[in-house]
Image (cartoon, rainbow, N blue to C red; front, side, top):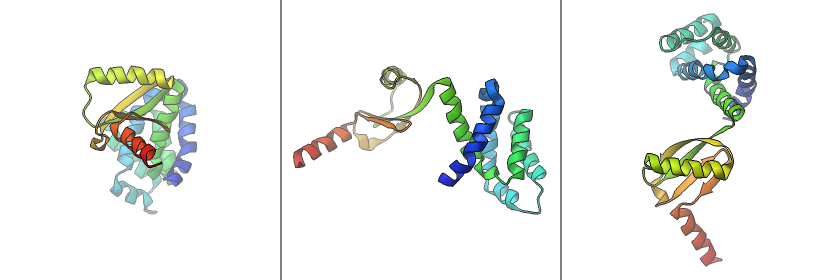
Length: 178
């Protein structure tokens, strides 16, 4: 959703800048608030012009407060979003906030797609090789894709490293038909 990304960017940057060195502490409450704001019933309530923004923000913070405390800056942020009618952009704000925090810490997020589940030793080996290859620290997750047949396909940001058997077969097909 390009629209949410455009709306969320200035909010994520402002929150990130305002928190300074405490930005990593905000991830817990920000993810929780984003999850609560994704609820369809809450979105409907927030869109109702007869319901005050303070009440909507109070509901969000009340639900989140049961699981993890929200800092005062977080309470103010949620109230600001409620007053501006932007609670629906919170999941995207949290996503962009995480990207900013990862960039500050020199970490990139990646996904390893493989045909089979990789054990921890294999993940560790692949992780160290990929960190050397990409020249940055990586936080990797694994996803299964049986169509790869074997090997792995790695996506880090907008870079793709495909060493799967499927990719090699496709390369051979192109070479043979050219």
